Length: 96
Picture 1 (cartoon, rainbow, N blue to C red):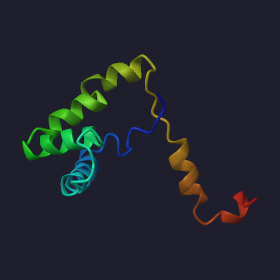
Picture 2: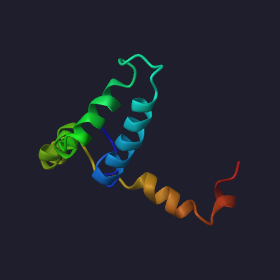
Picture 3: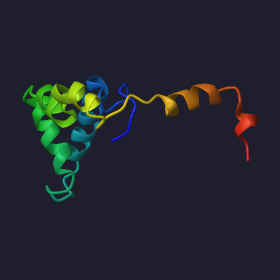
Picture 4: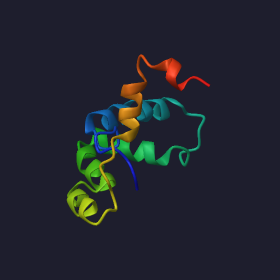
């Protein structure tokens, strides 16, 4: 797996916001079968039960990040971030 460690995947606040928005949408929509969006519904129930933080930690393996980095399962790569930072104001350089 290759991603920047500061992405939304690891940011609990962004995850929670997405869960609340998605969960409320599925809760309002009575036309969808309950199997559709099952993970959103599950996470939203976790949010309402005040256990979403623990579920988020399981999803991202927060207790294993150091081990994953040591074993090169994860790498801290900022190349995509750097590309977009450098892209700002340099549109002509990357234009087709």
